[in-house]
Picture 1 (cartoon, helix red, strand yellow):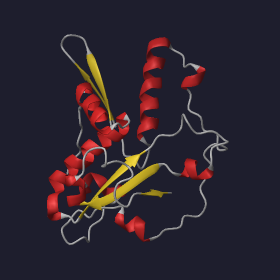
Picture 2 (picture 1 turned 90 degrees about the vertical axis):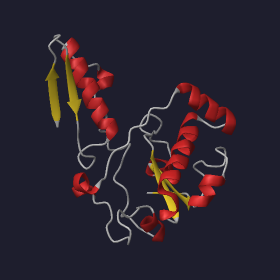
Picture 3 (picture 1 turned 120 degrees about the vertical axis):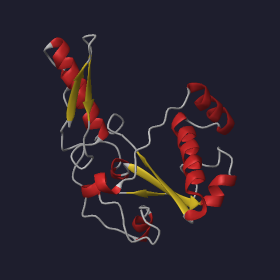
Picture 4 (picture 1 turned 90 degrees about the horizontal axis):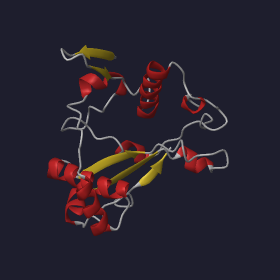
Length: 194
């Protein structure tokens, strides 16, 4: 979905929206950037074109699942019968949350926890989510999506290429009492999912 809004001052804004079943965030960002560059200059730089080389991202082996996959999805209702369905996500999701965190807050979190920027923000968001969910759910789950496209090469291990997300689960009380340095990607029962 694309929408253009013109303003009386002569300016305009372009709003983009999509469903992640169709395209991921990185691909949509590349589309917007390439579209903008094409509109400004009339050409695309060689590096701006997407890389569809199948030797880098080969199709994965036949999937196998275990009980931990079940725990990765939080039910929407109290009795645990309705799960998120990506095909009907517009009707399923209650809302989307956007966070703006000041650079000074990130620096303070990193100093307290001696963590990377991603770890500090992840710990902060996980604690905030756990505070909102509270004791209504015995376990608090959070998923971190990883864009490894710039770092992965043909020589990268298959496990590294397959590990595109990290999922963690921990009891609410564990998250709330831990210091930020302890609430990170290794907390709870985190495991790599393919």
